Image (cartoon, rainbow, N blue to C red; front, top):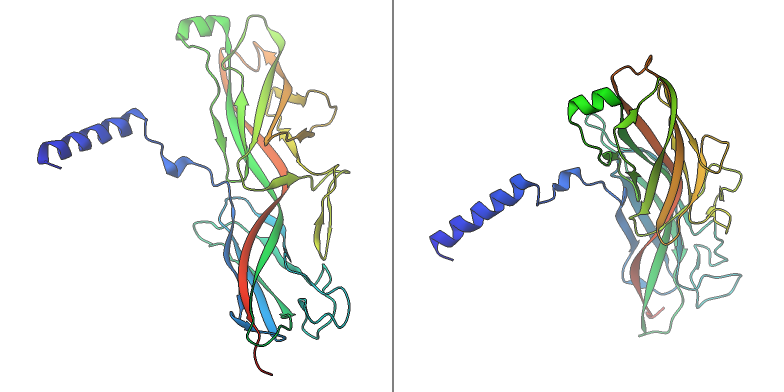
Length: 321
């Protein structure tokens, strides 16, 4: 590339950046807040009919805390009783229960500028299958990672009198949405500012679109229909899978209630990785609390459990006893 071409490329890049045509990656939300630092089996290769360690280390790289983090391994054949030499067994050669296959990584707190995130780690000890001398058999281990999480967001709602709206030369637009890290992302639908013509109260609506941008699936964790959890992780059924909880917080004279429910929080079905819910918005004290103009920052919260998978592999070698 000659000198003139290089100058042209630099100029075009500068124009794209200043015009906003190049995305600022620093402003993008992290949709995979739980990072797997290590999922491995040692030794590898492993001798047949010997104990091995399956270990995992996970770290919260998001900006909200993750609670009750579990990782359950599956994939190869595990022993369901005694004397099953061709299967993966517990360290004494016996049955491998679902509890034994589950690693508890506990709560993983988000890091901050003054306190870095502390990874969670757990290890399972198993006995490898007994295989014939000279054989080499590869095995793939999958892990189902489950945890509780929340995505928080906010949007600014402007309220104006009709006189103020006309004098300010303001145009209605879609409100901006700020969203924290998390696999479930949210976007506010509607317009702002909201214009009032008479004193008193007024009603409008605010709608939220939820999108699953992670690699797994959400489930309920804090309602009557929530998935239960124990020593082997979460038991997710049809009533809890592909659902999240959504709430918009009341702020001052701006009040919200979810359409279709008398509760402050509503369960939203995620169909095809998307959910949609509208809230009735009541604006109180127009002309008194809100005189000419008011801007209110509205907090939004989505609570859910999340399930995703990762994998690793190990080779087992048949050796002379």
